[in-house]
Length: 442
Ligand SMILES: [Zn+2]
Image (cartoon, rainbow, N blue to C red; front, side, top):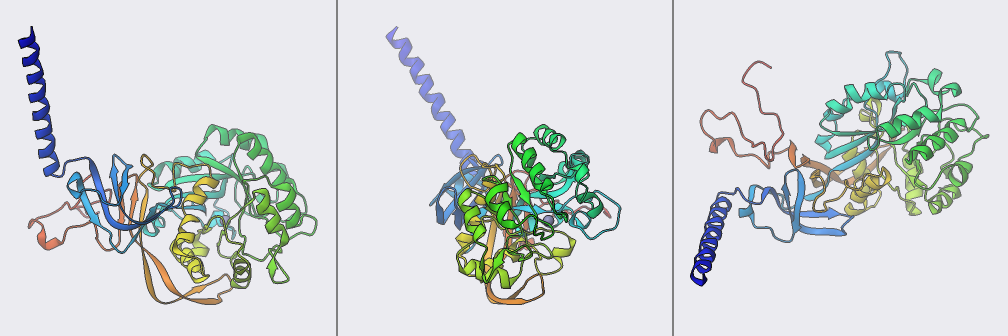
C-alpha cells in the first residue's frame, strides 16, 4: 500500500515536471502569458495614481499586468515605447458622427464625420456622439454607424425626437417628450450614456427641463449646449438650479452665454462646480476663444473633460483634432498629466463607463502611445486668433481591445529588409488589427 501510493506520487511529480517543461518551451518561443508587451513607456493612469516608467502587458484584449519590469520572454510581441507616454485610450465625449437628414443647414448633425477616419490616428478609442440622433432615429444611427465602427461609439440622445436637424426641429417644443427618450435610453443602456439638449433659441426652459426629466428616469447625465443667450433663462439659474450633480455644461470657454463676466469666470461656474455640475470643453467650430479660456484657466477653473465637438467645420478650423486640442491645454500651462486625466479617466466617469479610461488589470486594453513633440507651434481659436505653443501631442500607436489599430512610424513593425522576399503579412491576429494590404486592385 505504502509502495503504491509512493509510485503514484512519483507519477504525479513526473507529470508536473513534463508540464513545466512544455510550459518553459512555450515561453522560450514567446508563446507565453501575454499577447503584447509595451516596454519602458511613461504610463499615465490617473485612476490608479500611476505616472512613471512602467511596462504594460496585454492578454486577450485586456490589460494583464502593469509593473516596473515585465519579462519580455513572456510576451508574444514586444514593442519598445521608451520616451513615449502610454495612456488609456482617449475618450472624446462630444463628437458628431451621425447625419440624420438630407436637409441643408449649418448645424453639427449635418456636418458629421465617420468616426474611424478621425479617432485612432489621434489615440481616441471611445467617442460619444452629442445628440445627432433622438429617440426617433437612434436605432438607425446604431445600425448604420455604431455597429459598423471599430471605434467604441456611444451616444447622448437628443431630447428632440428627430435629433439634430436644424432650427425647425431643434426649436420645436412639441418634439421634446422625455418619456420616449428615456425609454430608448433604457433600451440601449450603456450605449446611450446621456441626454443632450442643444441649439435652442427660445426663451423657455422646456428643453433643459425635459432633458433632465429623461436623464432622471434613465439614470444618466444631461449634456447642455445652452443655445442662444436669452435673459429669460440665464446661465446662473442653469448651473445653480436646473442641472443636477453629474450633468454636463459643454462649450465652457465659448463666452457666448456670459461664461466670462468682467474678465472673470461667471460666479455661477464656481457655484455649479460646488454642486457637482461637470464642465466640458466642447471646442467645436465656434465654442473656444482664447480671450475667454485664458482668464478662466488663470483663475484655475479647469475643465473636467476635454472634448472636441468634432465635425467637418471644427476639424478644418481652430479645433482640428483631439491631440491638437489637448496641446492647447499644454500651451495654457497644464501639465501632461493634467491634460491626460481630462481626456481619459474624467470623461469615463462622467459617462458612467468606469471600466474605460484606465489601465487597471482586467480593463479593456484600449491604449494610446503618445509623443510630446517640442518645437514652435501655433494654435487657433474660434475667431482665428493664434496662441504660440512649444509642445504638441503626436499619436504613435493606438490599441483597441488589445489590437493595434494605428501605427504612425511603424514602431510595431519589422523592417522590410528583414522579411522574406515575397512577404505579404507583417502582423499577427493576436495583437494586430491593421488591415493588411490586399494583393488585388482594391
Ligand atoms: Zn456639438
